[in-house]
Image (cartoon, rainbow, N blue to C red; front, side, top):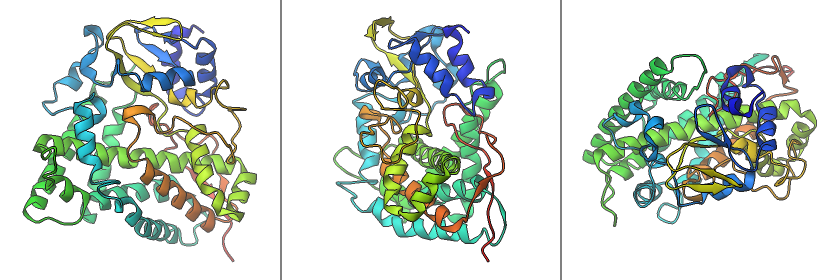
Length: 409
């Protein structure tokens, strides 16, 4: 197979269950980027990805692309681009405004304060398994947990959570790059869902301006900090980003996590016997089966040289994080799942100015979720391996994870 078709093969749903051999093939052509049939460049080696994530000459803004690579649909929304698709200084301003209400130093307790809630929600979900011997760990646990948590964090009323969940699902379906299929209908639906979600959260923020509460949406809506407050469109776009990024990835972290542990029963038993190993296990899961497989939105602002290859200005770069995480030049025995790995600076949360700002929450959710599941499930067995995967090659994880467990006597 030609290296030029690698992206087409990586995004082909037939390879969703195991894209890792394709990533190995990508690295063999490295360390430089590999040009694809549509003109974009794939980067699959750790050092090159890390360097590009820290390179100010590489833009995250879709408007930086050269004409043939411009995505007219994404640019005509009439809404501002969320900070994930902006460059500094604008990215920094918007991210700082959001971060003030999420983490230290301004709001040092927000994530920690969720811990009790998280444990309760996880316990309630596990209790709802009842004495069923067959479960779908995605529908019954990995999906409802993070969506409930992020809605609680932002202040979405419990009754609206299913609607928000539907919108988020539709938005993520728009990230599916199925070859030989017209992406327009799915992408248009995603755009409409994003707009509806933005309107909904904008109205909720208006309510919070009139009657402030102690949730994050209220804090964002009423912040008159040094940078001035977010405009209404910025507030809408930022809340949509937090909501989607705040649960879609964690669903995969929990789903991929349980799948990997059930494939390694010895490790599962070790974790059950010693829960203090869980933080290291979560880091290794982020390396071994990362919830975000690649970043499709990076563009050089000038001709740049990467691993001996010159990538022209304006041409899309696709950074394959999941491939960098398995680069043998960076990790010893990279295809081995090792929860006691010492040197584990993975790319599971990206790196550089755009590194995932929800990382502390995601780590805590994964730790509590997996600990609760191991505690509640005696001898869980996969009923389907590989399971059915979600469509998106970017946010890769099981869509269903049917398991059977021994009933508790």
